Length: 366
Image (tube, rainbow, N blue to C red; front, side, top):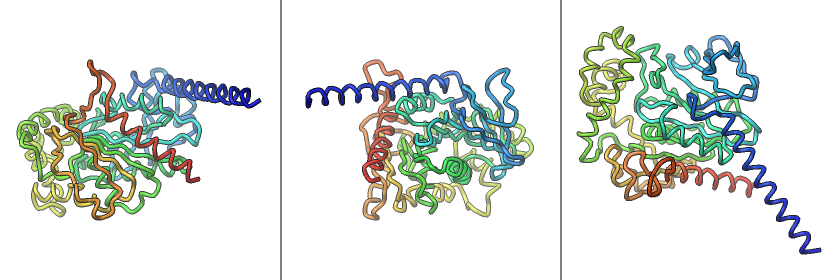
């Protein structure tokens, strides 16, 4: 009898695991990840109210009207008047069982939902049984600015509004947050700066810049390389820069400092005295000690963009919820694995492992 019972238990366990794996594979297929704008399909009827935004569906020939309905494809919600000063884009992930944890993801500087690291993480998260929401910042990813207010290192308000929307929309879900590069810096600052983070169960920040005034010796080179990547951002938002009378100055900016001095600082004289003051106020290192959410920070020692030496290594003295992990290699958002690196990456795996551990902990304490 004991042997029979053990055999049945083992069989049931295998069946349950296979069912879970099959369910997650179906969710990946339903999300249609490789062919879309990264994100969002919703099983729940969700009406977008007047003044909050409108839906632009990515599926050709779809007649969605004003609602996000039970479709297999992707819906993109564009918030204009509903977000502070407009121009913010947010989407929704495939929504299934209300018990499925939700990961809120922030991309890097001038990035968007189509970045390879976002797409890779999305696929891996869905396979692990998570739903994902990716926040696409204003002016990025082909979504033009509607006002002179831009996405920058000191602006956490847009993320706050989007996160508030998600937490209010899904009150019964576990919410996790993940930020890459600048997204990680903004998330770190937000977690230490805001008091209303109770709904966030855990967070991971990958390759964040902790102190913008403390840079790697190779930064002058990367500064100019990164500035060249601003080309699409400048072209997409040319109409706004022209209206602001700074189009020529922005196009001639050779460094991040010159761009800020042309496009951001002149319009925020009441907040920042100069570029160094902006960097100081934007740096999350000043808020790391106040992070209470279990947060994992992952940085590579050879990262030339976000200097590991600027990390708040003494944060533990303040009983912070932050845990720092340093790797010898990995560069900036690298962390590839395998002899022939492709889609396998340490950063996606360790982020999901961190979230898994918190999910398990929640189950054992309830």
